[in-house]
Image (cartoon, rainbow, N blue to C red; front, side):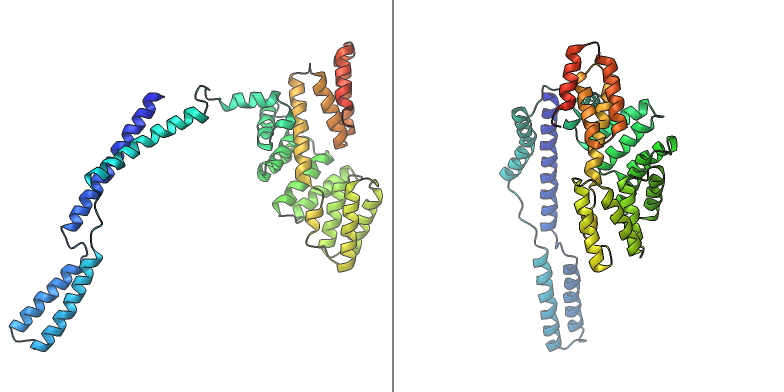
Length: 365
C-alpha cells in the first residue's frame, strides 16, 4: 500500500510539473506573438494604406483617418491577446510540491479515520452476514440481496419470488418487482395475495392511477379472495375514476362496513367517501391517504428473510417465535399456524427451547 501511495505522489508531482511546464511554454509562445490573428490583418491594412498613399491613390486626409481607425483596432486586438502572467520558478515548484503532497495527506487522513487493517469484504460474504442477521436490522436493498440468493437456490419457490418482489418494491425497483411477481404467479396463479401485490406495483408504476393492468390484477385477486380489502378498495376507486361514482361509493361503503372498528383503514376510507360525496370525484389527495403499500411490503420482506434463515438454520427457538409473531402482525393466519406447527415439532421435547419460543412469540402483543 505504501508503494502505491508513493507512486501516486510521484505521478501527481510529475503531472503537475508537466502542466506547469506546458502552461509556461504556451504563455511564452503567446507573449512572442500577437496572439490574436486579427492583429496581423490590421497590420496588413496599415501597410496597404501607406502603399495606396504613396502611389497617389489615397488622399492624405483619408489616409490619416483610415490609418487611425486601423491603428485603433490593432491596439485593441493586441490588448485582448495579452498573455497571462507566468508563474515564477518558485511558484512552479510550489505547485509541484502541493500536487505530490495531496496523496500523502490523504493517506495520513485515511490512517487516522479509516480502517486500513481490514481486508476487502466480497459481496457474497456480506450477503452471508445479512442472511444470518436479524431482518429488522436490514435495509430494503440488503433484504433484496438475501432473497435473490434464496430464489437462485429455489427457482421454483413461488413464495420466495413473492417476497423478493415485495423487497424489490420496498427498495424502489418496481420493474424488477413486477417481473418477480409475475414469475410467482406463473407458478401459483391462484394466490390472491400475489395478484394484490402485483396490482400495488402496477399502481406504483402508473404514479397512483389504477391502470387497466392493475385493475385486471385486482380483479383476479378479488376472484380468488372476495373478502380481501385491498382489491375491493382499488376496484371501487377505479369505478369512481371511470365515472361510475355511485357504484364505486357503494362498494366503498360495503368495504367500510366489513372493516373492524379499530382498523385504521376504516377511518381513512370514511374520509374519502365523504370527500367524494361532496365533490362527485376523487380528491387529489386521496392517493396520499390510501393504504401505505410500501411500508407493508418492506415488513413482509423482512419476515421473508427471517423465514429463509430459519429454513437454513432451524435450531433457533427465538427466531421461530419472532416469525410466528410477525405473521400475527401481518394477519397471515395460515402461515402463522404453519410456523407454530413447525416450531412445535422442533422444540416440543426441549422444554427450555420451547419456553424461549413462547416468550419470543408472545412479546409485544
